[in-house]
Length: 376
Image 1 (cartoon, rainbow, N blue to C red):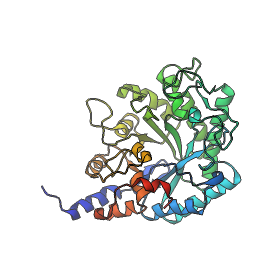
Image 2: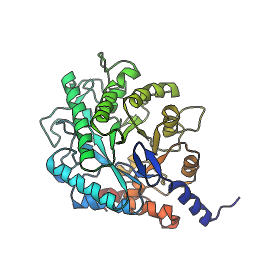
Image 3: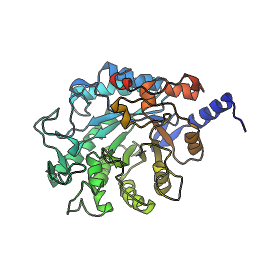
Image 4: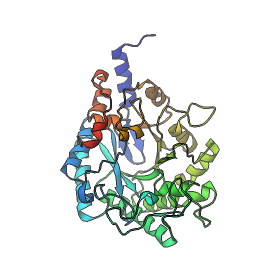
């Protein structure tokens, strides 16, 4: 059966325009903006250009914006003085303006709370004397300890920093928070056996390795209102370790996710490089699909949505052609997952959501890596 362009447009609008619920938050449609580091916030302070950057996308129909990663208030959390922070009077005042502008444009917004852990190098900004810290002081792919293995006091300090940032997010008007537990950064370094060699309660089997993440979630949950959404982003792959896996089977994945649900996660943001790839043998479900099936929680999918090239290649100066949305719409229609996070396509075109929701597919443009250099 041949589908006309008008019929395809109508289907996309019907499926993507449905509201979604995350705890006490109603998101006006199924389109989310994926977090993407931009480095346009000198001193960690988001300015008016950042306000405009996010509000333009909300005005053009993005239902939920997840901000770029923002450093929590721990000296070892980051590596650049141009990445925004989610602590400090000026920094939070800047973020309050962002939240207000997104709401005025009809969208909802959550900050992504971030600690990079052992990705940090000695001398990195904004606090050059702070050491790189991690569960075992190990970097991805290395067996030599080059950083500081976190003490219980360090663990407690970082947990407190996440909780304080979440409390600040609610206080200044954000709609929820996302905890960055993916891509080989600090929380993920605890989750993954490759970087967690601890022999105390924070190391060992997969369930033990979730203890740090679960304690962060629990501390955040206790700090914010009961209806305030707590989202947890996770991935199997790591930086420079694309074949790394937390779980080889659905049963192993369930063991990792269950403590996080118990601690208070409302939604999972399941990060993959290509959303259409099955996660485990014997099923077409992707990582977000398995996450929803195993936990019953709201699931957000992400990974090259609307494009046919990988995100990593963008940093090598490569663009990406347009990809079909048919597979995505089929999966959303089956309720395999609940929301879809769009990254580079929204970076390229602030009006991407509006064009898709109104069926103006012919106006979509392929991704050009030059877009990474601007804050359009």
